[in-house]
Length: 288
Image 1 (cartoon, rainbow, N blue to C red):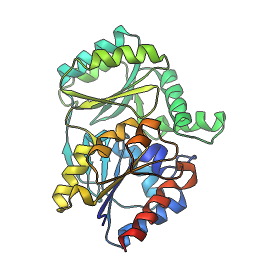
Image 2: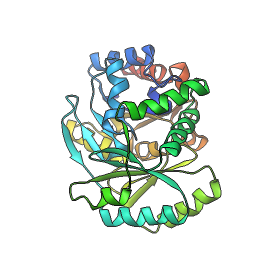
Image 3: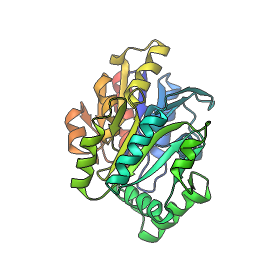
């Protein structure tokens, strides 16, 4: 019997319009009403994660920034696992050497040092996550991240790093050249205290080695007295692998990467076909 369900957001809980679909929202609430714990586990920061959840009137804990932060359903911050500034500087220098654009997730918000590249990176990510919006709508959605304060422009990452109260949660890099991306990924593997993952084919996500979705889900389950055999996870991308490695029941989205599907116990429908709702209801039927 499943007692805890951990759900990824982009390409999973969110549909083609990047909102929680009505069917998915209803299925989540059905699970909660039956006493099943639901937690969202995302690479997004807290602010960007909560927005679509509130729109869908879903109240639940959120594992954000790939496990770097955990907040309960009341949005109280319970844990933070950061990247050291020394390690952050090594990563900065590596990306600079390879001429790779990246963004910085911090306790003060998410920052970019290049407005144009930030807009294009968001558009590319939405497309890779199965967006059904046209190019004009995607452009507007990308700009909205700035308007909402989800992403801010900074003069220099180095200046942010020098501020004593800055806490680095995640470094997110974008690169369409697969060879360049693979080369820098190999170099990153020489840094022992980071976790390397991805939420799309053309990005790299870097967090502290202890900040991973799977670690956070396991910690939450332990706190609730739930065994991993009673945990179901739903995801579509490589930053979900750590969850797939520890959960008793693993569900891949129909739009997931093949490598993720190969790790799954069940492949549900696509994110634009309410795949999360289909998987949850299937499990609730089996719980009875």
